[in-house]
Image (cartoon, rainbow, N blue to C red; front, side, top):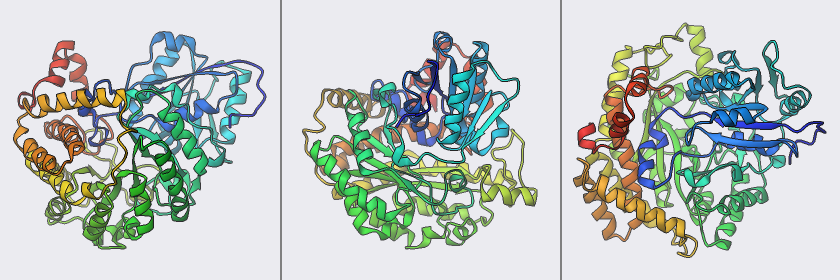
Length: 547
């Protein structure tokens, strides 16, 4: 549904999504292999807000991961809406500066401002919380007056709009063909209280839900756009937060896939205890789920207690991973270094876990305290919150800072040493991919998919298979997959490993923060100082020269 408030004017709203700082999880180095892909995933928040605006208000959407908002677009707008996460803070401020230079009123919403409004004194209006009564109040204000307020106005949602009343995100405003994967939301909130996570505080512990009909209608909207991504990611904080609801929704998803000849693959994030839900796992397999992101955080069970994540130990960790693999689900894992319980042996425990688990993709991160988390509150009381931009984290670790960072460097170097990552992909070829369902060719046999496959195949063969210095382990893994008829696996391991290896090498050269909350200032400044040709060469040069 749209905002139902009566409005007297027509407004033009420019929704601008800030660029991401590069990270392991955005796969930016893989985009040039894909032919036209420029960004990771369309943002649900701004597309939802755009769809909610009153009838007659015109909205435009710009994702600066794809292209920079132009002066002409700022000139067109009556108001500029921005949303983003903490990792995007510098880019959020930069958009506000450009909007104000154009004389436009600015509005900031989303998770970062909801968690830490004090970070954003430069915006005219702050929208804190989810869509709801604060959104309607904002519409009323902008309907009456577009002049910039003399002092910042903060609007906080008290009554949320039920997810069942959410409009479908304005997918038509986003160039879906420019994204690596699509995005979809079924639920919001998570019942767990992991110490480092701000989700329960921001979105609640009682999951709220969309209907199956809403889900299918949004999927229809996605596939109606030519060149849509082949994979759609459920951005739910925890896909099994409400197990009964997930179990009830999945048959509708299976039916939708069958009706449309399986045009999509799905991915999601969930807790590791989903391994105890065989009925849900089988339905996910039938719906063509391929990947699940699991915040494993640490392989040390005692450490899980310290961060309130004992649900990860509800089943033996390796057994749970094997169970998920047996339903065709490739696990992607989040790992945190710098926990209070770490010892000199923790690094080796992690390296052993990387090797034994066979998980190809691990986002190994140094602990960062986020506002509105139990971790933030505890460290604040203990006097262990740091505000030193020269450090890799805002946490005063129990172990020396340099020791933790060195451990992180060795861990990512081991995880993404080419022979190691391709060996883990070979493990997936043997234990995971054979358990996936066979889907009709008809749903995937489109001009866009054929074109995309040809471009990706050519680039993987040339840039990974010929020019890279890791071509030998790639061909070893590719041959292993091809002998099993797993052609799609060759494409997947090629572009995923290409990104992870290159990003790791950059991180080891000091170009990225170990916490991934901001790009290294020195590298960002160096990029600005380099010529266009130097930056292009740095991006496209064969990897053995860039390393």
